[in-house]
Length: 327
Image 1 (tube, rainbow, N blue to C red):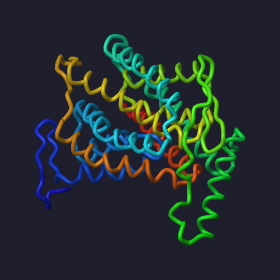
Image 2 (tube, rainbow, N blue to C red):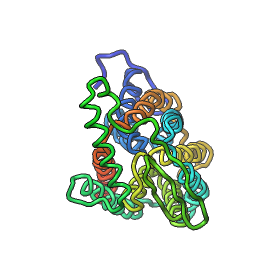
Image 3 (cartoon, rainbow, N blue to C red):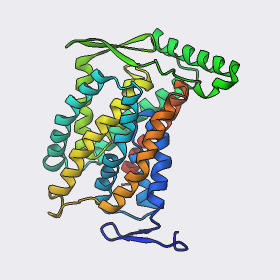
């Protein structure tokens, strides 16, 4: 489809495309998805398979390489604006890392065929995605008073900004709205954001991260794509404080994933190392995209963030179910 433009030949993947296509696509995708704590790699995968005709198993490791290059800029922006919930982040990391290595072991030695498990994961994600969409549609009810208060404060900021024409660009979360840890114990974590308090079980979150790490390690499913919607839909945490932690967890999962694909023989005895040049080009587009998405998030109502995150997760879930039905 790109024959009319000067193209670059990527010898590892066999892809032939103009050099600007991978970073341009990655920029658009990552700008949208990083607002919800999802790297966008799950959208880049079908693009590579369908449009670039990159069908080797190395497409998975190339996707993970994109995460390694792109994610740090988004995480930096969340840190800079004080919207990193560090207790949540550390618990996600502590659970994800051992889960990833256990997952790779399970994948190689115990469960070589991922199709049955993928349909299970797809069903879980479908439930989470539809639940987020339902909640964002206005028919569902936000369970916590704290989340309801955040919605009202955001609306008040927008009204004030409209009344003050010079301040229309500041409509959204004010700079002073940062995450502050209130308490951190083995039983629970409490943090404050924009004057409201949020609580979650330490052990439940750790168990979630461990399970997500194992799934991500075994089947190459992005950790953030699972952790983010669960934190929002089940733990009732605001998207504004979940996105940074989910992205950082995905980044760490991707480090282990790239190393695994590059060093551990699979299937025929060879490795499936990434197409380094293609993955880096995708990542270079993702760097500004992640940064812009993290910056834009504070100007977007949580209702729309939930709607987009729910829609994205629903598409991911349907793709897994479709893979199972068509296999």
